[in-house]
Amino acid sequence: MTTSEYDVIVIGAGPVGENVADRLVQGGLTAAIVERELVGGECSYWACMPTKALLRSAAALRAARQLPGAREAVTGELDVTAVLSRRDSFASNWKDDGQVSWLESAGIDLFRGQGRISGERTVEVTGADGTATTLTARHAVVVATGSSALVPDITGLRDARPWTSREAASAQHVPARLVIIGGGVVGTEMATAFTALGSSVTLLARDGVLPQAEPFVGERVIASLQAAGVSVRVGAEAAEVRRDADGTVRVTLAEGGQVEADEVLVAIGRTPNTRDIGLDTVGLEPGAWLTVDEALRVVGAGDWLYAAGDVNRRVLLTHQGKYQARNLGDAIVARAKGEPVDTGAWGRHAVTADERAVPQVVFTDPEVASVGLTVAAAEAAGLRTRVVDYDLGWVAGSSLHAEGYQGTARMVVDEDRRVIVGFTLVGPDVAELVHAATIAIVGEVPLDRLWHAVPSFPTVSEVWLRLLETYGR
Image (cartoon, rainbow, N blue to C red; front, side, top):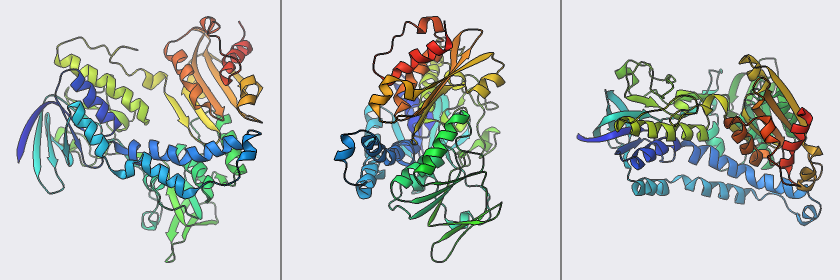
């Protein structure tokens, strides 16, 4: 066994762990990062990047078909082999050479293997060959191990060899029939992708489609999925799953009836990757989500153990985990140097956006983009609100963007402060509009000042003016 000492040890080399380590090294500390799989994590190989690559080709084709002139130039269908090949390239063909090279250039030491906390500020790494290395930290250990797809206890499901988001993102074939259990982000995006690639898709949405979003979002996405040929069954619940000897999957529904498919994708939630990282050695429960304070310190584990990203369950989004990572890395550097740490609202080391301004894009057809609070969440928070909706199809730029453009924008205003606290868009290519709303919410820009933010004409961004006009001065 060998022993090495660093200022900070980071367990998990996904985007969150990489960003923590990078900020530490830039701040003058030494950092080691431990990874049991591929450097780059879930987002790089089995989530954000490959799934969006699966979706993009079909989205571009749909966009061309919505424009006279371009529509006539499109004579073929999607080349599935080319789509999958492009997806593979975005996943770096599931090799992490490039990410490892970046770690080296950034001055971050990599230890491959299973990292387990073995005591205060101590992590033991067991390599694939059984070699053990003990790492000790002068200042902190950061858990950034992320999450994995949750496979529920549905009778027969595990024996049926279901797909999770990993198998869907890395699929090397397109099943003729695909049944998806779950109507959330993964379920709806993969229904969009595989329908475009030629699958006959059935979506079992027990709790509704995109139930955390504004109600009009789910309505539009359901209508679009159905128009594309997806069988959307809102309220349907899988009671039993069985795979026959010939490979056919049979999903028996709680309300009666059965759905047959060639593959079944489970997309109902996530579970933390904390089962085998030594939490019991510091009095915590293996396999549990890690509760953190405002400084992202793990509650009940002293002042040296931190958790960032999915694993702390604040927000399960890559970009928000990276936001936590940057601010946490800077805070650890400040503490190590005896400098002040500001975790007050919107402070340099705070993660206030986790609670007030989380942006998200769902790459369905149509796209969904949102930031901040929904109407229901704002009311639950006790805010006195006014809701302003506007039809995106009435904006001049939308008719230029696509023939028959349909969409909705919603602005949720805190009436007492006259600032926006929530913004939701659904429509073609609305993803690029959400950052303006994010800035308005984070900056708490008064509506009176927003009147001076003049949108360019003719762009879809003119919806900002139309929303303000609807609200009134």
